[in-house]
Amino acid sequence: DGSIAETIKHGVRQNAARLGISGEGGGLSASDETAVEVTGHLFEVLLKDKPNAQVVAPILASLVTPIVKAAVADPELFI
Image 1: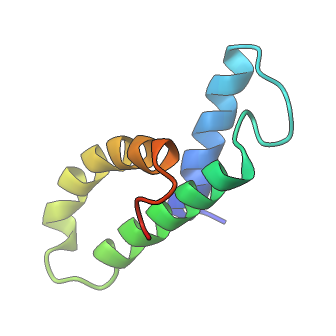
Image 2 (image 1 turned 180 degrees about the horizontal axis):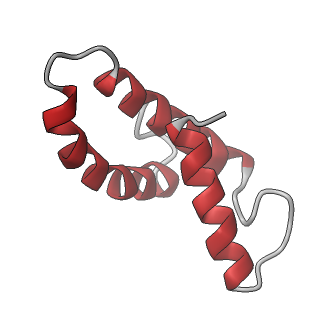
């Protein structure tokens, strides 16, 4: 669907396949998928219709992977 979360999950699945990890989720558990979804939505909200979105987008993009990793490592990060 072109969302940030779907892009992240697609990348995870590609990397998992490259590493020989099979399965529908590409190594993502249900809680991992939820963490990715929440993180993706967070970044979509941060970028949506903001006057400085073009300026901050590259900075926010560099934060996506570390925040996804933190969210997967700590399922209570967004609670």
